[in-house]
Length: 133
Image 1 (cartoon, rainbow, N blue to C red):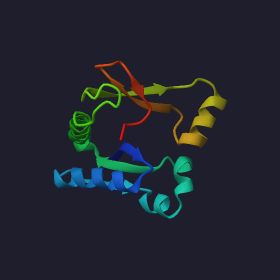
Image 2 (image 1 turned 135 degrees about the horizontal axis):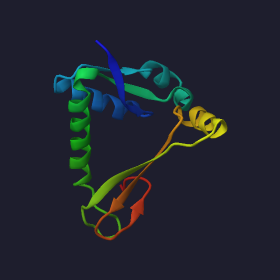
Image 3 (image 1 turned 90 degrees about the horizontal axis):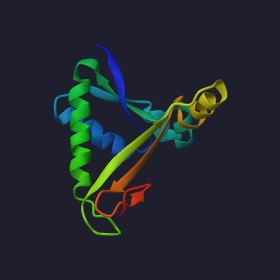
């Protein structure tokens, strides 16, 4: 059985919630580097966080399940400005060129590419770097 990484986490609780969600739906998966990050959280950027590994045959099913759960959750979060529940998640992936920018991203984030996630309210057009409380 071959496993591939589907997500990466620096938060133990979120990682285990999503791991157990996949297991409850019959998807074979595990968390790689879970114990290392739990013991020493400062190593998370260096090794790329806890990696959710899923069997290759179930990658599409697992990705759809995790995305649908996240979309369902976003439908319940109200915008702090207009109070509508119309938030959407936007992920920007930056693939730098050149050796030094790639090395910098690898050392800081554990990947040669950098990822920025933000949330956008389609109702009032406001953008948030994190989910409102």
